[in-house]
Amino acid sequence: MTVSEIGATTRIAALFGHPVAHSKSPRMHNAAFREFGMDCRYVAFDVDPGQLAAAVAAVRALGLLGVNLTIPHKEAVLSMLDEVDAEVQFIGAVNTIVNRQGRLIGYNTDGRGFMRSLKEAGVDVAGKRVLILGAGGAARAVAAYIVREAASVVVANRTRGRAGQLVGDLNQIRSIVTTAELSEAGQEAFLKDIHLVINATSLGLKESDPLPLDVDALTADQVVCDLIYHPTAFLQKAAARGARVLDGSGMLLWQGVLAFELWTGRDAPVNVMRRALLDGDTQ
Image 1 (cartoon, one colour):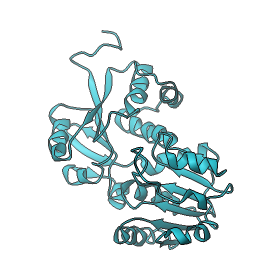
Image 2 (cartoon, rainbow, N blue to C red):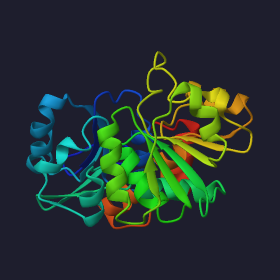
Image 3 (tube, rainbow, N blue to C red):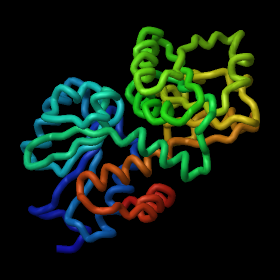
């Protein structure tokens, strides 16, 4: 059997999300499996939220190698796992499941992946003022690392109660976090002291989504990040204002690298995975 064939011994890793048709994860992970000649394949499954428990049970029943989780399953899956690591206990969200002989263990590689992407891009958050838009699982994963280095962090979210909960949790790590309501009238004055803006909301996944922030309040001195890995209108407009922009492709790469290493116990072929993302390698 050649590496390109699927046989009776092939191990499957997967992505569970809704939707998943846009995902680049299969090309990245399949390139890594091919690089090592591993009899493994990565596929994306569009899992309706009502079918998540059945899909997780299938990980055990079918002996899947492991699973990545994306919107909207990262938080809902927690109660379906046998064990989660300490990072997940704080974040409250899982993006990677490892199947260890039928025992499902949850991890979150998003925050570490995001920080590696910033480092690779030469963005240093030490001593900086950071604005995080959103308070869901992605925001929590990123903020748990940002708060350790930044001078101050501000969380803004449409649901103030959820933002307050995140702020309270983050201040247990380091008491530098506050919450803010960004009214249109006050954004320019507020943003002038912000060095790094991170959109950790889902706004931008659809072309019809509103912008998460008034881009006219941004300046050329700021770095603007979006965890969504396709070029969003938010980033395009921020770039037009002169800001330095980073999309979520670097985070996608590095969280995938970490997931691959959890599943296989091997150092991931980072450059192979990077080329697959950039070149559209889908073999």
